[in-house]
Each structure stands twice: as structure tokens, then as C-alpha cells.
Length: 483
Image 1 (cartoon, rainbow, N blue to C red):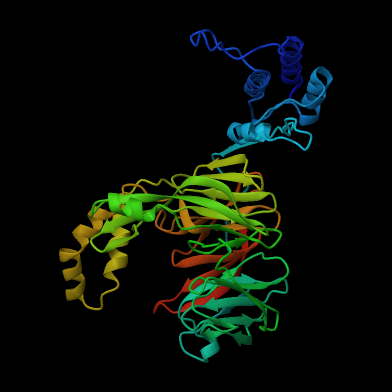
Image 2 (image 1 turned 180 degrees about the vertical axis):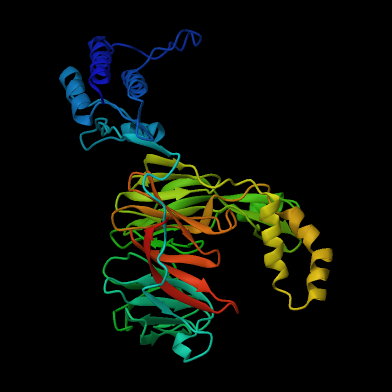
């Protein structure tokens, strides 16, 4: 805060504290139309609002919303009233706290807390754009060859500290490790329900205590492997309250952060007519030893389409994306290039907004999508028949606006920075955007259209690549500045 702002804010605080606000009462029940008398906590909140308004400044592509430091304001309030004043963001919850009684039968004082909130806006990356190096550091996967180098449905990959790569292939129900030079080290897993067996495989990143953590979405359980591919333990999620829609992620203490299935799906499905689209409301939750804690709720989630036999995700539909950091969880609804960060107490502490590619669906988007669908057919006659009979209905069901980023499009680095995978159809070549821990847009990376980000650092990426015959492979590339 600059000196003039600090001086003015302090003056407002001192004037408010100098006023006698200890004797104000609630409105008379005999005269409900009388002017409302503010209680001390209401005036304190009003003072907070004034200070926030005075403290809104522009600093290097970011808006910062803040007040005096908590210690400064608390010192003022303690000096005047003998205890901290109730400055809250969640008024409803804190009213309940004020109603609780302590052991002596007196009302327990609420805990005062001031939480700064930052809104960070970026028109362009702070640093130069990056591209992939001409050749990968390592590439694994063949069109034809030994089974351990053939992939059918890669559903996750992580790069370990020594440069080795772990890949999950869902069709074979296998987890495979390759060394830093791409040589096969071991294969673990098969289809089944016993230890080390899977019904579906997803690799989770950044789980403390183990480098390799597998989420089985079919059996709803988590399996940990050691560096040699041996099972350390398997934990079933049934009965824990953890029912992830999509893959969960690990919090810094090893508990799971997840987005659950919405409770109201059946009611919404009954209200939606055939041919209509609707959107789930979803919540970001955190598994704890004593149960599940909801960090954020009422978030627009998966966009779905109602058809005769039920519903399914909408083509080019928006979905909720999330990722856990040491300070909390980044999440967003993909309506625009915007993410919110909620801390581990459930308070939104910052909002990141940046300017990505235009999301309006254009003729170019439709032409590229049509060509991708036509390519699925082997003969010219089949392609013409598709374009004549099926394409008009598919085109008419597409939305007018694209999602901003992919459903699984957030990938957090150890320092709290987050890579965002821009929605794959937004640009001819795919874009990755790197936000720093505070939400400022730092870098932009362009990768081939037929690739998907699996893992990354500040200066490297692990990509899933698809070849001419749709064969799959993984490759690690260094990131270099573009020309």
C-alpha cells in the first residue's frame, strides 16, 4: 500500500474506532419501519469495505484487493474494545459460531480473521513464448515391436526425478516404467480385482510418500506402487464419502481432493427435455481423517445433453477443472479464461483472469471438426454419406462457444505454478499457458494438435503423441524460446 493510501486508510479506521458503537441497538419491534441501527460487527464490516475500496490499486497487470495488515487492525480493535473485532467473509457460519456456548455457559467469542483477496488480470504472458525443442530427450512407443513398447490407450504418464517415465495403459491394465533413455524396466498390473489388479487405471501426480499412485475409477480404489513396481498398499474408497467424478488429485498431506457426482442428477434429468442441454452444479471436496470437507460448491460443472435413453457429456461442452497446490485448490468452470483459488479453510483468496484465444465457434472450427470426423471413414463413399446424412445434425448440436480449457486441463508444479491446457479445438495448434503461484500469466507454449500434456516442469513437458496410424507414444521435450 502506498503512503497516501495507508495514511487515508488509517484515518478512516481511527475515525470509526473513535465513534461510540457499543450502545447501538437493534430496530424496535414496535416500529419495524424505523431506521436500522447497526451492530458493532456491521460497522466493522462497513469499515472493512471502505478500506478495501481505498486499497484497490493497479500493479503490473494485476489488481490487488487488500486492507491494513491483520496485525495493525487487530491492534486498533483490541486497544478500543479489549478483543478483536468480528470481520468476517462467511457471515452465516460465524453467526452460528457466536451462538455456541463455552463451558462456562457464556457465548464463545468468534475468531477474527482478515483474508486478503487478489484479482490478477493478464493481457499477455509476462515472458517470451516457448516451443518444443526440435528433438525429444526421450520417446517411448512403437507402431510394431515388443509388447512393452506398444500402447493402446494411454491414460496417464509421470516423469520421475531421475528422468524415468511411468505410463498407464488402460487397455492392457498395465503400469510400465522406462528409464531416462527409454528402455523398459518393468511392467505391473493386469485386469482383475485383487491387489495389483485393475478395472481402470489413472496415474495421480504429486502424491507424497510414493512416486507412483494409481486411481482405479472402476473399482473406486487407490493403489500405491514402489519404484520396482511392487504394490505397497491398496485402499478402497467405498464408505469414505469419496466418490470422484473423473480423477481425484492428492493434497500436500496425501489426502484426496475430488469433484463428486452431483446429488441432484436424477431430478435435473427428469426436468430436461429430450434434445436439451443442461449443466451439473458440482462441488470441490477434500478427504480428511474425520470425513469429507467441501471447499467450494455450486460450481457450474459438466455440460450434458439429454437424449431418449438418458444423458451424456455434450460435444464441446464445458466442465469443471481443478488442481491442488500447497496453499489450496485452483478450480474453474471453463466458461472463460478464469480460475479461482480457495485455501484449505474454504476461502477464495485469489482469482486469476487472462486473455486466451477467442472462444466463439467459427466456420474454421466447424471445418476442422468436420474433417476430423470424415477421417474416421475408410472410403470416399462412406465419407460423403456421413457428410450428407449425419453431419447436419452433429453441426446443429454443437455450441456457439468453446470451453476455455480441458476438463483435466490443470497441472500443478511443486512451487504452486499451474499449467493450463487450452481447449484442444480453440486453435489449430494446441496451447499451454503457465500461471505463476499468484495467478499471473507467465508463459505460453505451442504443442502439436494431436498431442496431450501428461506431465511437465518449468522447462520440459511429457506429451502423449499420436502417429499417422493413431499409434500412441510418449515423449519428453525441453522447452526453448521461439523465434
